[in-house]
Image 1 (cartoon, helix red, strand yellow):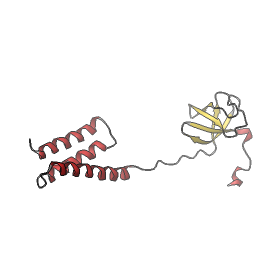
Image 2: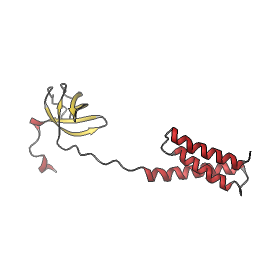
Image 3: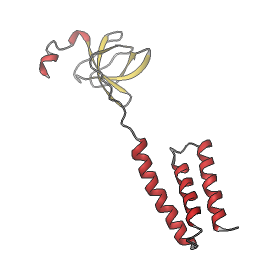
Image 4: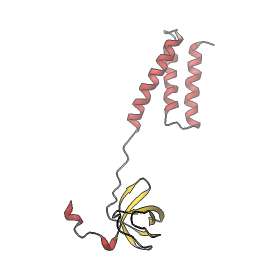
Amino acid sequence: MSLTTLWILLGAGLCLAELFVPTAFVAAVMGVSALVVALVSVVLPSAPLQVGLWLGLSVVMIRAARQWLDRPAPKQHWDAIEGQTLTAIAPGQPGRVLYEGQSWAARCQDTSQAIAPQTPVYIVGRQGTTLWVLPIEHWPDNLETEA
């Protein structure tokens, strides 16, 4: 079997693998790189140089694909979104809130304040899967003027 045939089989195999095992296009890009090396192998018969070319092309193409595919996620605005506590939130401790029909972990933004169960709250932020809340009755009236 010639090196050209080997590169074609490797390229096709990696591209096919991407269909069954999603790898964020890494396998597909490496497969395309192998197919490019198959074309170059006709004029570049050295196997070590072909492997080096394949690795170099793969790295360059993966970086290019990442820049092209990675889009920043849209920012979510959590200003004055309402929820309701499901459990008590002790000062500085986590609790649970109901937001859009789902139960979320939550903490009170004011770490010295406790919030009783079934209390309406404003969701003022999010860190990972934890929501930061403030009770509606303690909402600062001058929030708009502070900005």
